[in-house]
Image 1 (tube, rainbow, N blue to C red):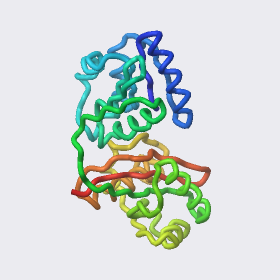
Image 2: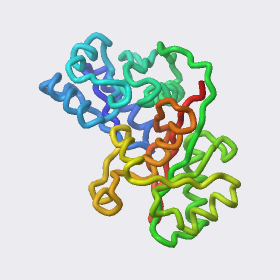
Image 3: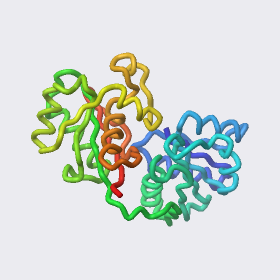
Image 4: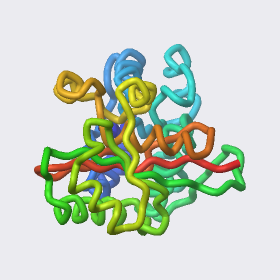
Length: 254
């Protein structure tokens, strides 16, 4: 969930415009939430992505007591009420704030202000997938193609296709990876559980079924981190069709 938080009538107009432009993403405009500090801290604690249209100082004073670290905190962006600038304020790399800020900047055609250090580093991308048993390979391919397009990537950018170990013999996933000439890797619940705090959402149903709160995101995050020995982040949150899920994670080579 993206919450667009604004405090003025001018900011509200910008918030509604941005929500319209983000039509492919679940979002909500929060105009003068009250009590303000309690409300925004609650959004932050439930790991909603926050886009503030107000002064940066207001945001920092409100969130300071609940900020933990870049691997657990959600992405936080700040825009001025005229929509001229967008700043990824918290969780720039690991939380995806930088990538979201780029998207917002493109949508609003404004100035992106990134203050995090330039990595000069090579990105690594990994696909994570989950599916119903005996899901056909064409269904998986279609979902993967859709996700690559949303992320602005091609299959040549992808280092591996991954899933949970109970899918190690899933014919459709194996065929997909083989046809694309990509490694197919699976991981156990202990390994995938290490990624729990980085998931965009947590499914109690999936946890009761397979032992982790999300297969596609967890698998992609875990393998991306393994490939670089650095932290990993979600480039594309879990997308799904009727039979499968897909996510893309990113990390950086030193």
